[in-house]
Length: 134
Figure 1 (cartoon, rainbow, N blue to C red):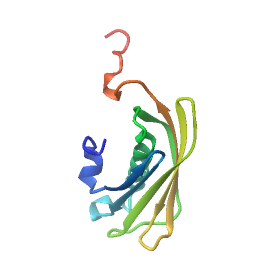
Figure 2: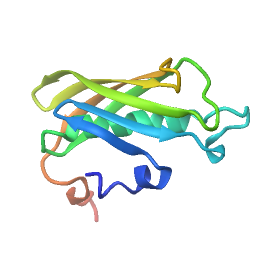
Figure 3: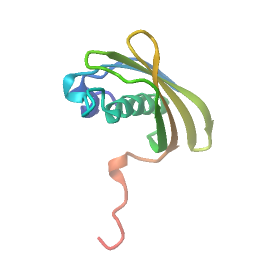
Figure 4: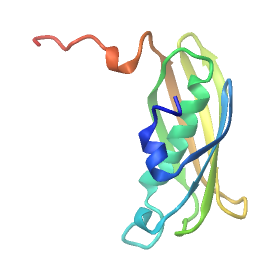
């Protein structure tokens, strides 16, 4: 999955560890990631947390996708800050899962919390059936 992840690669997100139900990723915030207030755009924090969620939920092998997710931003993040996102599986039931991701700032402070719900699908995402009428 890491090899086929151009979004993470282009942002310099590194995978520190991954095991079934757990992943830890790291990202340095650049000046290009700032919003109009001069702090990290929430979309980049969401992407980092979502990537940790993806690695943790896919570590067992079957293709697993996000069903839904939400994020709570707790502290502002500045350019140059190095963030660590740690995803932990909370529950798995049938084809579904619940994952929490905590994003830590450079001093270890929690800057954001993310919760994602996953669903395991058969096949690869790009192998979906054609839409009706096509």
